[in-house]
Image (cartoon, rainbow over all chains, first blue to last red; front, top):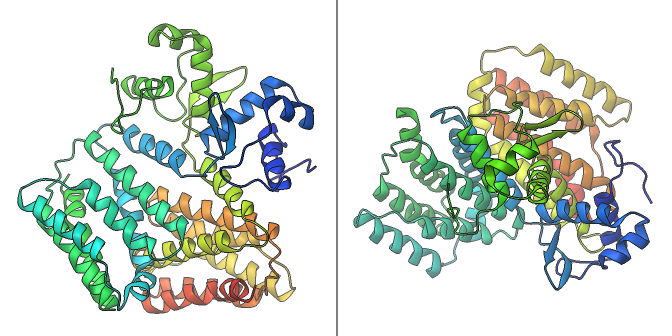
Length: 232
Length: 232
């Protein structure tokens, strides 16, 4: 039993529950020992175990299903999204820096993954992604926004990579972006048609293996929001 | 008082404490109302408030200083790091996918921010960063690792950008990377000298405004770890 973490801080009950998950070889979705068993095995009080389980539940390391038991969680990035959304809306007044930061990170991830996405999609055909582009284009023509399709497109593109972390991160920052945007008094000159169209250009470029056109389409994709942020 | 979040889920006491932080105009470091005052203002029980405060504390949205009070937190990414480190070590056996995912994200962020870093550093001189490169080079020559200097270099580069989110993210993934690495049975062919040297190449390229050389140096920087991950 480790007595200190790598960072040198005190080992908490939640650290010890994590060690127990590892040593018992449990996987996401597996049932954890009961509260009573955890108290016995770790030699700590019930209130200690409860507090640790609550913390691990906030981090989605465990999943408390009331009336059923506590399971190993999916380790989603929901906690990150919650913290970042709040950080985004906490800025004084109409300070847009947090939103700018999030858009910057989204852009950096898209650009940074560009070569891998183009390699993965070159020579493939992706009717589902094309259908999303068509939906976005039709909605934009009606002056309507298309957040669902937009999110599905970005996560769908990254799903080709087999890197679940980057897919979750991009989805997380997308969620922060869309949650923060309406809370700020930013008049988004939402150039819906350009945004819809640039998704199509990204997809066409990736399928035809043209990394440079793909990068240009990413830049075009972020132009409306970048412009709105600069004007405000 | 909102009755449902944008996502449509039930408004929790922790959501209402976040609303209160916003409506009271509190900022990181400001003191929150006492537990008793929160109970009164929100009309909920003390145990409700306590559980909510614990959750917000896990997310670093509040900071509980025992004996002093509860303050608005710094919204660090510590919770993200904890969840991702655990995800990284939870993989069955010697599965290196989670570490590969983290290295991929680090690389993507570095490449994605490259243009901005080169623009920010062009024509500047950065003695502190050069000193870190010298330290890394000296340690590598002695066959020693240099995690502290490495982390300080990467966060120092990004500190030039004025985007605190990307700096924190890069630091967070760096921490995940170094925490997960020793827990996996991966024989890292740690080409220390190449890693040390490529930091110097990155810095020289950025200061001379050469974006292409900067990108090449990023790729060289990740080569030893990428090779080790492929061989295992």
